Every structure is written in structure tokens, then in C-alpha cells.
Amino acid sequence: MQPVVQTASEVMRRTWVVLGEMAPWVLGGFGVAGVLSLWLNARVVREHFGGGRRRAIFKAVALGVPLPVCSCGVIPLGVSLRKHGAGKGATAAFLMSTPQTGVDSIAVTYGLMGGLFALLRPLAAAVSGVLCGFAVEALDGDAPGAAGLADPALEPETEPWWVRIWRNGFIVLPRSIGGALVVGAFVSAMVMTLVPENFIAERIANPLAQMVLTLAFGIPVYICSTAAVPFALGLLAAGLSPGAATAFLIGGPGVSASTLLAVWRLMGLRTTVVYVAVLATCALGFGLLADRIAGPGWRPPGIRLAEVHVHGAAGISGAIHAQAALLLAVLGWAKWGPRKKPA
Image (cartoon, rainbow, N blue to C red; front, side):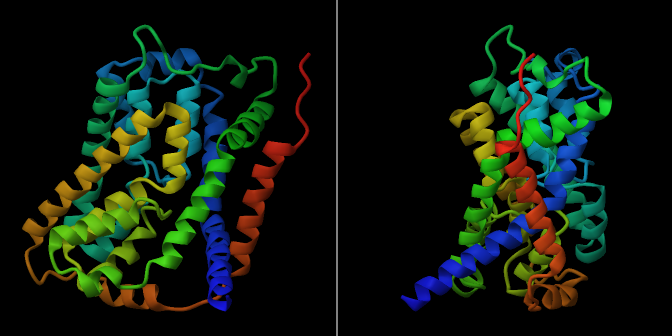
């Protein structure tokens, strides 16, 4: 009984930590989405991202790759695009390409892992985003003439700009995806608690098998593109191949349990399956490419720093407690707070 209680306690503790870690990114995403609502109206989105036009997919990827937004912070932005009229393909391309990398994570990747990974990460984000957008449009696109899920109620023209930012960013969007965020944090915590440390490196020697397993581990776990770098270094220090680290860098930041739940709710099961399939295919493909380029025995420049970062033990900081509490407060207020009465 005691081990079960300890495991449950550890899962809840990790859930709280994941909520605290994702809080700045999610709340920042809510704020950006609220600001975007000032100009990201149905007409603008239909013109640039709507329907099944190919240009919309390329525009979504070009916008998403440099943005420093993680797999949780991108959810409110993707929801905002979709609700303002973006097509499924453009929305999926944006959700796929944005969290994998950003201008900040590229710099960190170059400093700790060298030019190879600094080049492969944005390239993988762009390729996977375009492929995902085209695959979604081909297999589960909007009906002809449709333009997303435009919701005029998200942009009440009679309200002041600051009210629109607050209402769209911190009430409407959290109400739509708050449950998915919390459930995703719980699933991520369960995976991190129940999967033993160094489980893969101690049992699997085949590089392709390592890629598959690190990808399977990375997909449901929440981790931002910058924080993924030291974890990837830890994988390399544990003896995994550069390809396995590449698969993790693509799969971990590229999607999380929260993202999958949000995509499922926003665009349906078929799009979710396509989303995961494209991400997995690109992660394995770029992993094989990294192994071929790097060669056996390759070691990144930041391996010593990775050892300290991954294996260092510290308690939950006050900042994490405050961030998790703030995120839950915002989600709770959006879900159960006072509602505006219709005129």
C-alpha cells in the first residue's frame, strides 16, 4: 500500500511541477492570442490562412518556426486561428511547426549541441509543418467553401481594446482548453514517474529502436523547445545515438498530451491521427539523417553541463508554486467565474 501512496504522491507532485513549468508559456500564449484578436479577425484569417489554399500552409509555417512558443503555449494561438476562420491544414501546420523550435532555442541548441542540431531543428520544424498541413488538407480538410470555425463573438467591436484582449485571451480561450491542459499535465507526470531513468539506454542498443522509444516517450511529455536541449544531452550522455536525441527534440517539443487533446477537440480524431503520424515520420527521418551525418562516437560540446542539469536534485521552488497556482486560478476563473449576461 505504501509504494502505491508514494507513487500517487509523486505523480501529483510532478503534475504540479509541470503546471508550474508550463504556466509562463501558456499565460504568455493567452496574452499574445488576446493581442492578436485585435487584428486577427475572420476576414484577415480567411484571406491569409483560410480554406485549403497551399499558400496558407506555407504562411503558417513561416510564422510558426521562429516564434518562441512551446507546445502548450501554442495551443491558445492555434485555437484562436481556428476559431477566427483558419482552415484545418493551416492550423495543423502552425501547431506542428511552432513549438519545435524558436529563435531562442536555436541559439541554445547551437551553444550546447553544435551547428548540426541547430540546423536540423528548424529544418525539421518547417518540413514537418508543411507535410502535416498538406496531409490534413488531403485526408481531413474542411468542406469546400468552408472557412474554419469563425466565431464573430470573439471580437465584439463595441468593447474597448483592453477588454477584448482580456476577454479573448484569458476567458474565452482558457475556457475552451483548460481541461485539456490539466489532463495533459497529469498524463505527462504519470509517464515521467512510471518510466524508470535510463530505461532505454540500458536495454536497447539498436539506434532505430532507440529513436522509436525516445519518440514514444517524448510525444506525451510536456517540454518546451529550449528545455528539451539539456534533456537531449542527457540522452546522449546515457549512450543513446544522435538520431535518438533528434527524435526526442522533434517529438518532445513538437507535441504533448495537452496538444493532442486540444487538436482532437478542435479538429477531430482523424486530424489528430494524421498529426501524430506526420510528426513521428519526420522525427524518425531526421533522426536517421542525424545519425548518418554525425557518425559513431560523436559527442556534443555541452555534455558536461547536461550531466549537472539532468542529474541535479532540487526541491520545488517558490516560483513554480506561484506559477502553478496562478495558472489554475486563471483556468478556474475562466471556467467558473462570472459570465457576461447577454444584452
